Length: 421
Ligand code: PLP
Image (cartoon, rainbow, N blue to C red):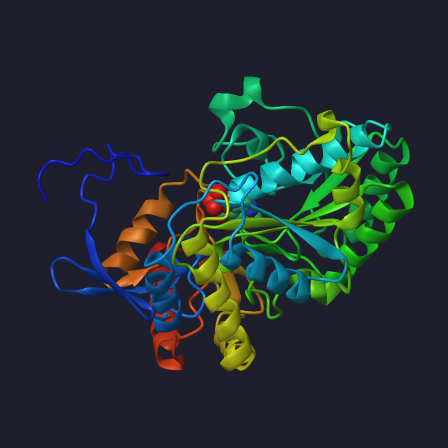
């Protein structure tokens, strides 16, 4: 390609001058302009669920685009949005009766935070604090960075980030500390909400914690009148083995954020689901109680139709079976790393597998990250480590053979780049 004018996300252009061009996406693969193909082991930043360009979703996009484009969503509605909202309410944990649309994971979280504060303000008992879990990631806008872990991603913007209360990550054996800390923070009833990534903290290093911790966090939240926001932007749509990760903790959050897999990874859409209590707090003849949030492309009909087709795929195809099979393959695949000296830890929840490579340097900026990426790319594999954390989060159509090839490459990477204890 000739000189580009594109500024890419999370990309240090000075160090990554050659950016491959993709001309076709298909199933588990990205096809490059040079005719070679890359196995997409991270579902293109965790969005692609069934596989790239599932025909049913692409058909829904085409069909809807023949009659609808964007429609202002304040004061107007359309069938794809109405039908999708009904479908989401029936699929989500019980009690989430209202669906607010936006366009990205970050906006769905921004909406959730505003709903939580709006709720307490509107019922006349204002609360202004948000409780967050150590190592969390909720997006890159100012609000979502504020509730995410502070570090290299947001150091430059620190002066603009708002203060939060942080509870420790519930590492194995230290779960009670997390619960005790939350109980202490929640006790003074200043916290509007606790926001968590249920079961797996994605960008924070694919850190996993057991479902019972979430169950207990919900109990504490309920007892103190603190809302629970489940950020299921990454974990939703089967990633952790169930449609939503909250199901495994048998809880219903007060607010649930979904995006990424919502359209099967085809076009941007997000939704924030909320309880009737939260909606009712905004339902008033007093206009000041209106939920003042919108983005121009809210509830884009084409995106809603894509999401509806995704829901139909879940209903009509053996998606749950595919997810179970993939989860079993991931668990079996990791077995071979249990005694591998180059990996300090390996873990899996549902379809997600992660391995901590032993290296001299850890952290997102560690030199090892780009080296590993290049190593995998040379082998036709898209694996984008989080520092020294290698993870596989593939589309559900990936085969056992393809996964085996990935584990082989990870083993080789361990020998090449890892160190022994
Ligand atoms: N929340 C979680 C848990 C995420 O993993 C992400 C993105 O990776 C986001 C929010 C932000 O989503 P988006 O990149 O679509 O804004």
